[in-house]
Image (cartoon, rainbow, N blue to C red):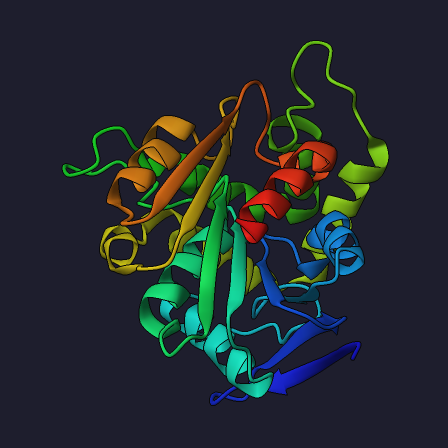
Length: 277
C-alpha cells in the first residue's frame, strides 16, 4: 500500500494514494488542487484505523493533464474505475467543493452493490452554483467568466490570490494567515494542467446535481462554513440537504471554504463521529 496510478478507458493515468487497512475512506479534492489537500485528514484517519484513499482528479496534480473528459460524468467514471481496481466495499466518500459534486455524481451513478456506506459533502457545490431561472439564488455566469479570464491571463497570480484571500478567509479582519498554506495551495494548483483547470470551472459551476442528490440512498453529512466566500451556503448546503433522503446538515459559524485545513481540529472529530454513527 502506498501510491500508484490506474489507466482509464481513454488512456488517462489517475494518481492515487492508498494507506492502511480497515473500512475505506475515499477523499475527493476541490479545484484546482490534488489529493495532497487532504493531508490533515489522511493522517488523522489512518491513525484511527481506517484505510485512507485519495486521488488526483484527471488534469490535476500528478494525473494526466487531459485535454478532454474534464467534466463530471468522466470524473465519476474515473472514481468508479479506481474503486473497482481497489475492490472497495462499504466505503465512505468525502468530497470538498468540486469534489463534493464528484461524490454526488459517483454515489448516484456508481455507488450501488454495497460499494458505498456513507458520504460527506464539505463546502460542496451541489445542487448547482450557477444562477438560472430554476436557481435564482446562484452566482451569475460573469463570476465564472471572471475565473476563466483570470486563469488565462495569469494562472500563477490567480492561484496565489485565491488562497491568500477568500478560500481560507485570510481576507477577513483578524484572520490568522498561514503563508505555508497559501504556498501549498499554489503548489498543488500549478501541478495541474491549465486546460483541465479551465474546463473544470464549467464542470463545477454549471453541473446540476439535483437528481443525483435525490437518488442517493445512503446517509450523507453536509458540512459547510457560514462564512464560505467560494461556495455560498445559502445556495448550496441549505438546498442540498433538502434533496437528500438521509441528509444531515452541520453548519460552522464563521468558518471559511477551506476549513478542512484551517480548522482540521474541529472538522476531523466531527467526521469521525459521523463515520462511527
